[in-house]
Figure 1 (cartoon, rainbow, N blue to C red):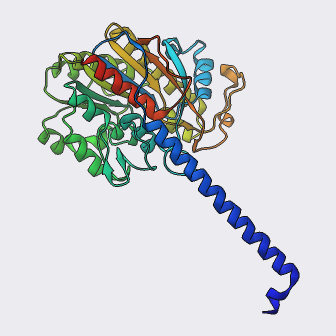
Figure 2 (figure 1 turned 90 degrees about the horizontal axis):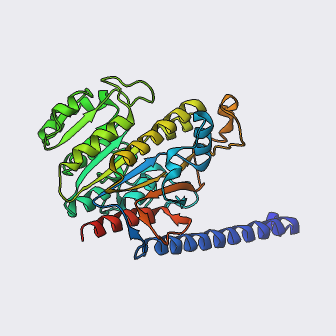
Figure 3 (figure 1 turned 135 degrees about the vertical axis):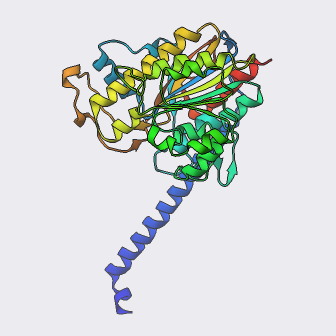
Amino acid sequence: MKFFQNKTVRVVLVCLLSCCIFAGIGIGVYAVAHSVRVKKAENFDGYSYELVAKKNVIFMIGDGMGFQHLQVGEAYAGKTLFMRSLSLCGQSRTDSRTLFAPTDSAAGGTALSTGKKTQNGKIAMLDKENVENMAEYAKKLGKAVGIISTETMTGATPASFSAHALSRSLTDEIFASQMASGIDLFICGGRSEVETRATQITSAGYTLVTAYSDLETYETSEKLLATFTEISVGESTEETPTLDELVGFATAYLSQKSENGFFLMVEGSYIDKKSHNNEIIPMAQQLVAFDKAVERAYNDNKNDTCIIVTADHETGNLQYDGESKNELADSMYRQGGHSHADVPYFVYGIQNADIPEVVENVRLSLLARQIMQRQNQ
């Protein structure tokens, strides 16, 4: 008891208690403000714009791609990235419902797919309830659907557009959900992993393809799943085609599947993975290859397609300060994880739009849905 009778001890305890109370109040205020912001972002009727393109929507996600990544990619390529030429541009806020921590690809992908923010780790679910993903929405409108990822198809971002799971780590559950989805086309890397599920794939009615030239052979198949050793950023081979080649095939394949058009999601996964490893040159190569796929999507489909390009989050807290190609260095990364930084968005196919320069990520999902809904009217 004498300990607590000491005046200095009492002062210290009062100060500590006061700090705890103020910290608790601060956290509570932040949580309420965050909740209000989330609800405001999700409770949104849509944008006003003139629709130029018809029938199709291509949603392209450079995983981990922040504004600084774009500048590094341009320094590496020695030219302006094609995606900057798309009609509209701005920045997207990526925070999830998980307080304080940056979003992960599961929550970031879910926001872009469902129009709902969720907790980190969740795949098209909010709390314990499924939320309609983009593939389900497009299918409801009678559109053909394709999913392309440069990693395996159970990765968090492609999964968020094509499956449901309480955790991104539940890959068996995610894969089963994808096989039951009715999605017309899956294309991914990670061939060795995917081939272990060959029986499950064929039982679900998918034709399994592992060589690029075989895609044309099976282009009239009802459902296709193509997987390759990796998606190349350089020379194309039978086992390592490039992303732009795969986008070219996918849009041609999906175009003949439905009179109502198609929805295609394309993810450049390794912009994120190389950033986690702080590998600046490999990251730049992945980003430039992704940009080439954006250009292919535009050139092959510009007359009847809306294209949305964005990222699910920024990775690496990358800092670019005008370095030339020869000056690019791994030390330009400030961390190995995700950051809270806003990410870019680019849109082609609408004009006279009232879309603000800064948007919440969920509103890009709602924009894609609004476009598809208008195209079907």
